[in-house]
Length: 119
Image 1 (cartoon, one colour):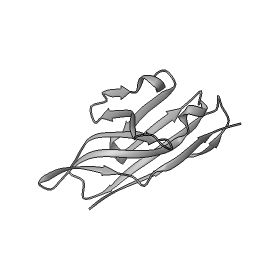
Image 2: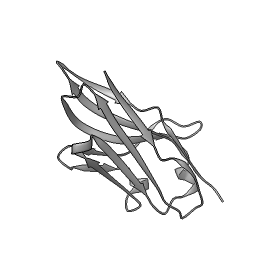
Image 3: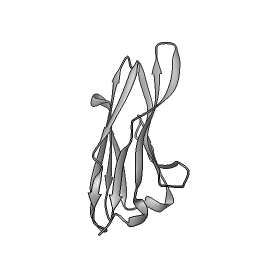
């Protein structure tokens, strides 16, 4: 059993910063990728950024140069540093991880943390 616990959301003014974190715990054999998705009201869930255990990162065009994703392999934790936040970044942010457990590789999701960017 694997759990992802994400945290760090909140209310911030435009131009402000927030840092999200997500820790994976349980019977983990290998973590291949960890990342963040977001879902705004009335919209589909979309990839924000992800990072492989080897440090290769992917960003959505809308967050490039503003968000930074990083992973602490020793702690099985991924971070998302969000700077220069805009109202359009408002969404529920979900942690995602592709993890090998025993004989299977599975996709896991956190419970979500809400980010609201508003003055």
